[in-house]
Length: 410
Image 1 (spheres, rainbow, N blue to C red):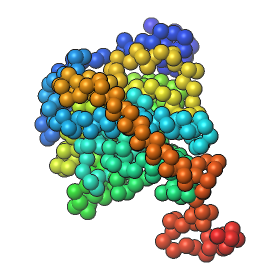
Image 2 (image 1 turned 180 degrees about the vertical axis):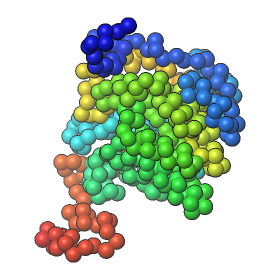
Image 3 (image 1 turned 135 degrees about the horizontal axis):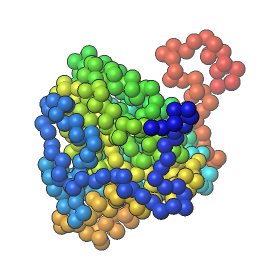
Image 4 (image 1 turned 90 degrees about the horizontal axis):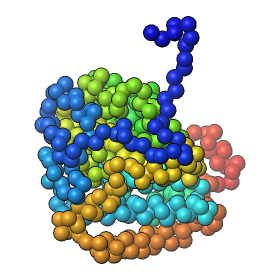
């Protein structure tokens, strides 16, 4: 029995620190194809174990196996591969642009491309995402112009948000991408509220909420689950578990729940975990959850088990809190390479065609970058008008803002 006379404060520790040997022995990975696919109207109480497993489709040989496989054609998979490759190339160019002083800030998606790119293909036009700053793949996979994304990053004269948002905090109603909030976790309650409003209006559109593992510790996350479960909101509640918040490992936010998906069980919400580096598995689970929402069966909580390969942002140095080689040891691999190998295994792709596609995509991204930079960058060229800061806030501008605009001479 512990000494009752002395209390000890507990702080969770990651398995390894910088300088140590990466260790993912605590990540239990089930065999691909081994997790069953229930009907969408399943009683959540009968699938509680799915909150502790991981749904996988691609096996080590690159084959698609099991009940979650077979939902996408080769053409759709090739399109998905290009989306992920485009996002990765876009990231690399914008990361370089930040280092060159062309923008103040950038956040990469390296290693997480499958999560947002595959999810987007399960939605319909009009559905609304409430994303964090690491779901740009939702825009890439929906055909949103890269030039517009870059203009927003540069805050130049062609910035669709007129310089009123931080770089990478995009917004597009037409593409179902709600304005990103820098105060993380707010998007969860916003998405649930939007979904409830859609149901009240007898609409057919659903919402998708996005959050990282660290932000699940915010009260907004739990409040959203209360309302989503109580009112059976047509919403998919996504948790991207990339193992690290800005500088703390995911165990700090997870507490003693075992998994993030398990947090949905106490609310009676069907909760699944999926291999976030498996494009086919992500799409299959997203489609299942989206169909449930659209069939008035309520919310689904999905945890994507993935890994943040890059820094949290250009302001972060991950070598200060994790081993440099940790990403190489991540057992679920690279989402781009895994999908490429699957398509090669099927005879629908080849190493030569992949190399050619990389060159074509790089050329396209560079052309978009040149066009965006012709409108200006952080320290050069055109800027949004000062007048723009007064627009788009009120339907009718109040007198005090009119006075301020006059004083500013705009």
